[in-house]
Every structure is written in structure tokens, then in C-alpha cells.
Amino acid sequence: MEQQFLRAQRMESIGTLAGGIAHDLNNVLAPIMMSIELLKMDERDRTRLNILTTIEASAQRGADMVKQVLSFARGLETQQMNIETSQLLREIEKISQETFNKSIEIRSDIAADLWHVEGDPTQLHQVLINLCVNARDAMAHGGRLTITAKNVNLDAAYEAANMEAQKGPYVRIQVEDTGIGMKPEIQERIFEPFFTTKELGKGTGLGLSTTLAIIKSHGGFIRVHSEPGHGTRFRVYLPAAPNEAAVSVPMPEAELPRGH
Ligand code: ADP
Image 1 (cartoon, rainbow, N blue to C red):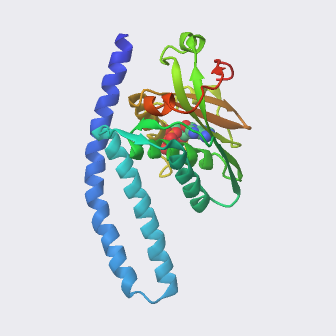
Image 2: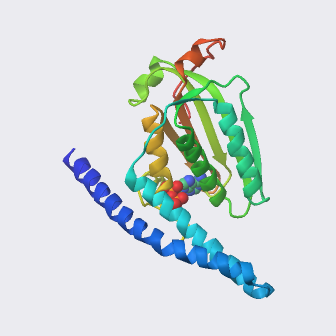
């Protein structure tokens, strides 16, 4: 218990420290980006233009990482909205189709009658993008990303096996890849802030800790199943918005805690 407390305290100071650095870095990056933009406008030489574009892309990546660290350090400001989950998932699928390398095949199976959820659309968008980007990064040589979503009704047996889960109607979103997978010792640490196996400059290690915090703040939970060399499957459970779950759609069969 005490150890947990110390750990939380350490994480908090890391967050504050990183937040301070990120803030300063932001001030360093802003003039770099602006200057590149100005230089690009007047540049006619192809080679120089290409170099400027490379610098710009790196600076942009830096700015994106800074943004991620800042939002982690500041904590989450939450909106409460009724979200049409299937539409959110279609957006995520579209972004992935448009931006991921063509060596990654993207499939989806999203239930037509998917329940709505209650919460912050920007945050949930970030959760799903984080999962898809991690899936992409795990498939450097190509593979298949599958996004599935369905309505599930968790019963008392599930509740007993999953301390954090309350029984009731949930939307279950699954993001599955055929990538490198994770060894158990990696899997144990993936939700820790700043834990990353990606090379320097490619990851902040904040994606999944932010993802977990967002899901928890929405009353949901996340499960991971991974096999090294075969792939990884994340399942996000979000409580269905009560009004939506109560209307029209009949409850599907209770889901038991198998295969999590
Ligand atoms: P980052 O992506 O910046 O490394 P994350 O918190 O999102 O930070 O992920 C932490 C680590 O979890 C990754 O560096 C990687 O080792 C592992 N990981 C996450 N998702 C997957 C996945 N789909 N396949 C394999 N490894 C993964």
C-alpha cells in the first residue's frame, strides 16, 4: 500500500517535471516551425525544399510529443456528451485508412445498433487513435488492423472476476493487430507513464497511461491479450449511455470472463 503511494507520488513529480520541460520545449519549437515556414515560401531549389520539409516534419513530431506530455501533466479536463460510438469508430477507421502505410490492411466490424456512450469525444478519440497507432507501429512490415465493436451485457459472474467492473451494459471496442506482440514482462509495464520500447524520438511512453486514465474516468476498463510474434488485442469496455441502452435494443447474451 505504502509502496503504491510512493509510486504514485514519484509519478506525480515526474509528471510535473516533464510538464515544465515540455512547456519550455514548446517555446523552443514555435520559432523553429515559423522560420521553416517562412524559408519554404521563398525557396525554389528542390533539394533545399526537401531538406526544409524534413526539418519541418521532425519539428512537428517534436511538437506533437510535447503536446502529449503537456496534456498528461495538466491532467484531464472532461466534457460530458452523449457520443454516437459507431460514428466515432468510423472516423478512427477513416483516419487510419488515410494515414497508415498501405502495407497495413484495415478491417472493421462495427455493430449497426451499437449503443452510445457518455463522455468526452476528444478524449475517447485520443484513446482509439493511441491504440491504432500502437498497432501500426507493431506492424512495421505490414499486417492487419481489425477494429470491432459490439454491445455486451456484463453479468454478475464477470463482475466477480473483474473487481473494477460493474455489471451492466457496455460497448466493447476491440483493436487487434497481427504485429510483433509483447512478452509478458513488457505487457506488465505498458500502462506505466514513460514506459516505451520505441526508439528515441518515436514514442513518449505516455499513450497507454493516458488511455487508461481516460477509460477509467469514463467508468470503463481495458484488457490486453498479446502473443509475441503473433499480435496484440486490446479490448476497451465503456459503459453504455443509460438512455440509449434502455431504449430499442434487446440485451445480447451475457458475456463471461473467458479469453481476457
Ligand atoms: P509509446 O507508444 O509512446 O511507446 P505507449 O504507452 O502507447 O507509449 O506504449 C507503451 C509500449 O507498449 C510501447 O512502447 C510498446 O512496447 C507496447 N505496445 C503498446 N501497444 C502495442 C501493440 N499493439 N503491439 C506491441 N507492443 C505494444
